[in-house]
Amino acid sequence: MPKTSHTPKSRASDQIENELRRLILTLELEPGMAISESMLMKHYGWGRTPLREAFQRLAEQSLLQMIPQHGVVITPLAVFDFVEMMDAMSMVIGSAASLACRRLSEAQFSHLDEIVSQAKSAVEKYDFVSLAGLDYDFHRVLAEATGNRYLSRYLLHLHQVATRFNYAAWLRDGDEGESIGEHRRIVDVFRQRDPVQAKAVMLEHIEGARQRVLKTMSVEE
Image 1 (cartoon, rainbow, N blue to C red):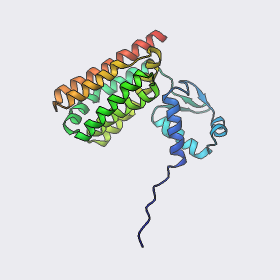
Image 2 (image 1 turned 90 degrees about the vertical axis):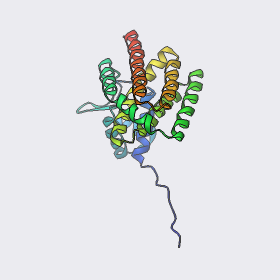
Image 3 (image 1 turned 180 degrees about the vertical axis):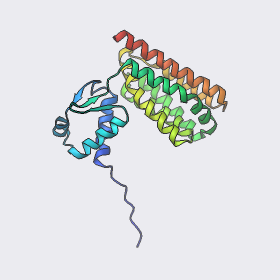
């Protein structure tokens, strides 16, 4: 008798984690905001145990802070944290780019082309929620192309932290076409399979993002 294959259902904590992450990354849950466990349970119908599991994982991703005797707080958007995160990014992104440019498949290049095209359309529509997801997907493909799961995991953690800062800057400026142009150039350079040029163009991109966000944060302060 043939075996019946079943697609495993997502755990409740996974579903809660994904929804909370979306609310945090798009700033619907504001930075620095204290969130009530009981309020979330009542509003969404979530169970206490899976909610606490989701809290723990989001805290490990630096999106939440679990403060003893005070509860759960959305991690604030602080200049110092952003600078530290970008410094960490700069230390590893060049080497990762050198690896990725040699290992990207044609299918991955096609995927990157499609992401850039969709991102350009999102910018034209001022759809920064979609743009945030596409920006993360772009860097996810590059991170995975390194072929090193530890490096990839670390890079994706940093890019996820960066998403809220980027999103806040896009909302304020009302445009992020410059970053999309940089993504287009990254793909073109990586296609040349030149590790030195790949490293240089990625470091330029990261430094450009640093300056754009810091400019926005200094204006807001």
